[in-house]
Length: 180
Image 1 (spheres, rainbow, N blue to C red):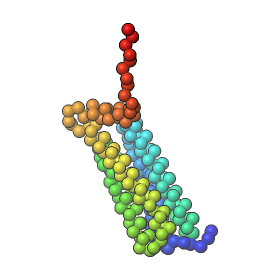
Image 2 (image 1 turned 120 degrees about the horizontal axis):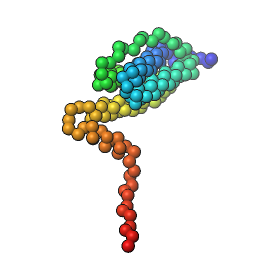
Image 3 (image 1 turned 90 degrees about the vertical axis):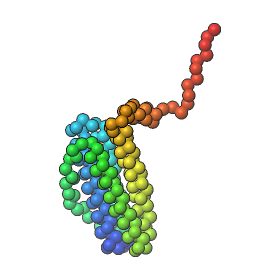
């Protein structure tokens, strides 16, 4: 192990975020269990995969802290929130989780900039981009849920059309030549 190249404050903040990522992984895992128990198998699969992604984020922080000469410290993780009462609440909870996580990442970026820790600032840019993607993904899920569930005529059909168009060919079919 080499010399420590991050401040104690940055080390602590990164450890806090590493443990936050672990808590996020647990929250998604719990929501996946809830979704599966309520027969939302596709949503459960989405949440299970997202749980693993959050766990990978945790490892990125762990590796970075240790690589910079700090010490990653695994902390206790609070139990996830109680199960949602319905799917809309579930999706809105996820939305709030991602917005809060973005704020935490942005605070870390601000701290790295204030300390002129350019290596950490650079490391965190990946997470800034990731949070932009996460927010877009979950906001899209919110839109799909609204389209599939809100009481408007034909919404279910629009949802099905949108799903069908996602994998549709960009090529038109030519009519067959009639045989004479």
